[in-house]
Length: 94
Image (cartoon, rainbow, N blue to C red; front, side):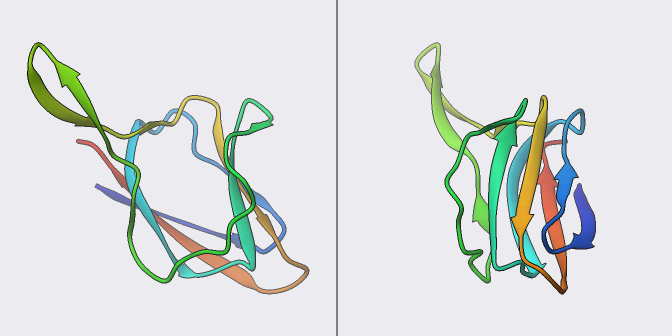
């Protein structure tokens, strides 16, 4: 499933309680963004790349390798900018 979020540059989008994030893409980009969990930054300010970005990481479970995405519990995306809009696509594990 893909969710679409739109907002003004300089605002934040709450992603909590939507599930496990497999990846994201900014269709319209803010100048910079970062992920924040429970008010604490978990990434540095980053310039968005114009492509899909995977958040999956390998996990070994009983000798088999699986993938895990980013948990959305208390997760937000903060953006920087004084004007303009952004559009964020988020891929969820189904």
